[in-house]
Image 1: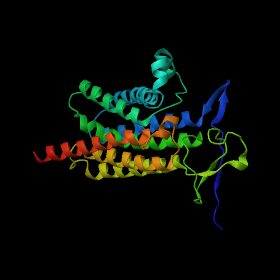
Image 2 (image 1 turned 135 degrees about the vertical axis):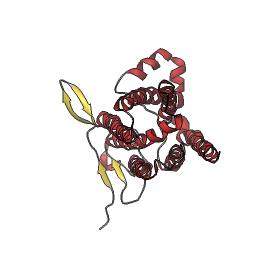
Image 3 (image 1 turned 45 degrees about the vertical axis):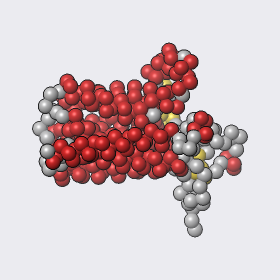
Image 4 (image 1 turned 90 degrees about the vertical axis):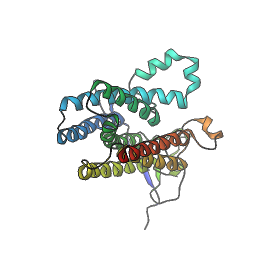
Amino acid sequence: MLIASISWSPDPTIFEIFGFPVRWYGLFFAIAFLAGFRVVNYMFKHEGRSSEQADQLLMYAMVATIVGARAGHYFFYEFPLLQADPIRFFLQMITPPFSGLASHGAAVGLFTAFYLYVKKNPGQSYLYVTDRMVVAVALAGFCIRMGNLMNSEIIGKPTNLPWGFKFLKDTEFNLSGDPSLVLARHPSQLYEALSCLLIFALLLWFWSKKKKDTQEGLMTGYFMIVLFTLRFFYEFLKENQSSFENNLTLNMGQILSIPAVLFGIGVLMYSNKKAKA
């Protein structure tokens, strides 16, 4: 007998400490940075670089992720609020628990941070750094999307597939709150999480086997192309995050994924040209 659907209703809060809630999303967010540091430190160590450099790069990445993702959320999804009250925007941007994070904004922040890191650390090229960091970023993507799943947010469109999730705690698309009216939906968070985990495994394997023979930029280019191509198509299975997207041919996630893919193609072209020079 096939499973008709999967009922999904985890509590976003794991436990409380002196009234302060510890949430699954925050836990996965922390794991993303800790695991990312371990990955980059491992790669740097095997290439004769110091843990101090990995520490510094992590700090750049941490600040860039939060600022870029928060700013991207308001610029891309809530720009009217930013225009109407920029001070409130700034305060919300820097105040935990950081509800509302845009991955495309995080990407802009990260690539900017890597440039600043390279300027402070001579002897490491920009693409050398990005080739290592995309491995950690892929793993972080898995963690963040698992956090979204535990929050029952960024849900997919209705589906009849046997692995459809009934997000019983969702109030955006089930205004009545009646569990019997909840539709099974694509677990789009899980699709993206598993894709990121696979990309992470492939990149780490590729680095371990080919790190001495691979031109700089190859891993960065393929990462951007594959990740954001998948993101473009996964968006067809997801509900829009903002109401203004309902009037668009492509939603904001798809629109922003196009330049990300083009950026990846540009990096590959530059990498191949430099390798042949």
